[in-house]
Amino acid sequence: MLVLTFTTGIIDAVGYLGLDRVFIANMTGNVVILGMALAGGDDLPVAGPLLALGAFFAGALLGGRLTNAAPRDWARASTIAFAATGTVATVLGVAAMVEPPVEGTPWGFSVTGVLAVAMGLQAAAARRIAVKDVTTVVVTSTLTGLAADSRLAQGSGENWARRLLAVVLILAGAAVGAVLLNVAGDAGVGLGMLVAGLGSLAVTVIGHLRHR
Figure 1 (spheres, rainbow, N blue to C red):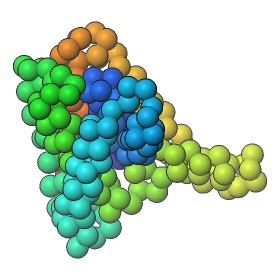
Figure 2: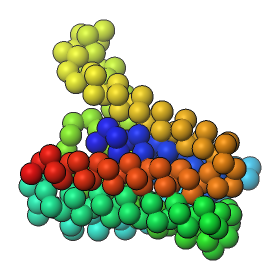
Figure 3: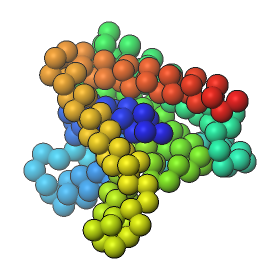
């Protein structure tokens, strides 16, 4: 789940920096951007965040239908969900390297929508596994728990290492995504998705085998 959090950072970085300020996995960011845009915020996108929100919801719905009947642990449904997410990101990454998506174009919107469906699917599957404080797509609640439950706040300090790692890894993933865009230019969006997709597939294989 921590590795998937890292790959989510990459996906959100390439989405925000390469696809017209759209978060592919962090829906809180999209809701905020959409609210500001609807209120007349300067040059803020509407279509991209709205598309990502709807697509993510659809992916989470699909993930729920797939995993809700499974045990709260890594199950066959988890493998299917994570494998689908990794495959989608990898295939889209290769396609985007061949034909870089341009913001505001049908291809750009297609990449945003399909990838957001995959991230919704991942989020639902991760939620079913329920590793505490590691949702793979957002760290606000994780950061809150890290502070509120810390010994400085007279808490137990429970799971502080896991919480800190989740925050650090999504930060590191975002940094990697930004570096890939800076180094590879237009192909950076596809390269970022490819790296994230391969990471997700590696997690899927290892998780499936280790669980068995």
